[in-house]
Every structure is written in structure tokens, then in C-alpha cells.
Length: 120
Length: 112
Image (cartoon, rainbow over all chains, first blue to last red):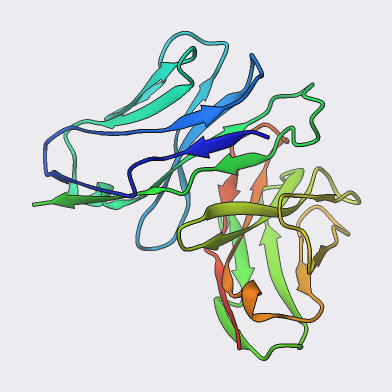
């Protein structure tokens, strides 16, 4: 079964600095999807960024970018110019693609999360 | 646009009682999902529905049931609640099974 591991339960960063959140996953598949979700204190789950495994180019969304290392099964999130509003839980998630016959295609498998605090 | 609404926002329930958590989306999404979020465990999929009239089991389906009578609604029922079902429950929807999932605001359920 696929698993997602976030090894940093908590992190902190100074405002305007850069921080990187780690995520590793375990799969024997060649094609799949990876996601980072943000959950601020409001509890709302918000998609930050999505990466298709067949794409070699790392996904970016404004101040958020990923470092996708397929061979190492690593999918880290970099937040540049951190802002107070970035304070949140961040969840890494994995999804099997169409055609996966393991029974869980299309299901999101989440890591346990990293609590990020941005300090003024 | 409301997106996804969940009701109630929070609830305290006596063990052994039944409870239905409501979820409604106005985006005409085909797929809908129920997750539970427990401290230190992240989100885990309970049940899902690819389209109206179909449902499937997720990672932790025991003790829960769902129905999908129409596109917009996806209620989650606990037939006989137990304390281990104390959690925050999130409903989500997506246009298709492999598209971005949009989440509701969550329901905090406490079973005593």
C-alpha cells in the first residue's frame, strides 16, 4: 500500500524567509499525482500545489514551489518570502492515477502533516 | 457561491446514538468524499462516490454508511456512535475522480 511520510511534525520560520517542508512517499507505480494542502487555523483545507509524476518540471504557484525527486520518491514544498498568513498545517498527499488496479485509484492518501509557524 | 456546506458545525453525541452528517455541494461535481481528521493522523478517507447512485469504501469505512441519491448531497451516517468516532469530519467534492478536491468547513463530532 502507498504511504506518505512527513518527517517534520513542527517547523517555524521568520517572516520573509524561505522554508522547505519535506515529504516522502512509497509506491511501485510509475505514474501518479502528488499534492500539498494547507490547513490554516480556520480548519479549511486549501490546495496549494499539484504535481503529475510524468512531468519532469517542478510545479510552481507564486511563492510556493516543489522539488520533485522521482527516483528518491521525495516531494518537498518550498515557501519563499514567508508571510504570517502562511501559518498553517501543511499536508502532503498521494493519488494513484486512472488505470491503477490496486483498488484505491483516485483516493487521496495523506501524510500526518507539518505544523508551520511564521514568526514576525 | 457557497461551494460545499456541512451541517452541523459541531455536535456532541451520546455513545450508541445515531447521527447523520450532512454535506451539500453546488458545483455540480460528480465525485464526493468523506474524510475524518484525527490529531497526529492526518486525513483518512471513509467513503467516496464517483457519481450519483454509486458509492465506495475508503480506508476506514467501518461504522459508517453513505448514500448518493443525487449529485448535490452526500450524507454520512453513524448508526451507533462509539467514542473512537470522535473526530473532525470533512466532506469534499471534485469534478472528476482525479481532479482537484474542494473541501467543506468540517464538522467536529464528539462521542461521549
